[in-house]
Amino acid sequence: MGIYLVGGAVVLAGLIAVILAVATGSSESTAVAPDYSGVPSAWQNRNTLGDPEAPVTVQAWEDFRCPACAAFNQRVKPGLVDNYIVSGQVKLEFHHFPLQQHEPGASLAAQASECAADQGQFWPYHDRVFQATASGPSAFLMERLIEYAVELGMDADTFTSCMTNQSHLLTISESLQAARAAGHNSTPTVLVNGVRVANPLDYEAISAAVDSQLPSDQ
Image (cartoon, helix red, strand yellow):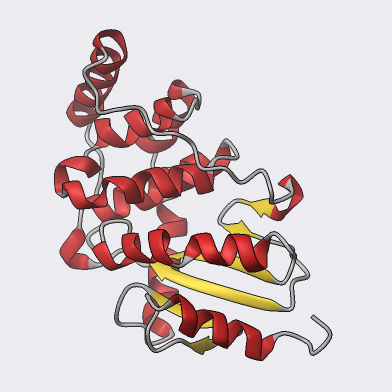
């Protein structure tokens, strides 16, 4: 399934790169963490964003190296957050669907996002990685994924240990298997209360699908 096994040499190189980047300021510009202040902390549960009791669930099956997924994150997700998630109408679920043609970076980034979730930073890290998607494979090397965690104020040692131990390898593998079992064949695949949206990059289409599932009094 193209899951990347991290070797000791790669880990060492990554740690050296992070140390040099922090010390010299040579890394790319530090990202500003997205503002999720309007979403209660109790509604930010790892890769789920929104009221657990929301009447509508939007599932996004994504690959961090997928340009269309990065476009979904830029064009569609902000509107969902502002117009539906903050008000408790929608719960957004991120599901890992790393594609073979984007390996090994796709699975590495997926594992990194779960390591970020361990520190309560899944969504800021998710957004930071998608900012790097257009930069290509080099943005998904081990050292770069660690850099993004450092930029967002995470504990570097804990994050690095999570990555080198592949603590969430099984989680990614199971999500990939679930995507295949469900018949998903492209990213992003977006479902609204279990119904696939034909054009996942069209905010109006997704908004209409959400509205059709909301109770009449909302």
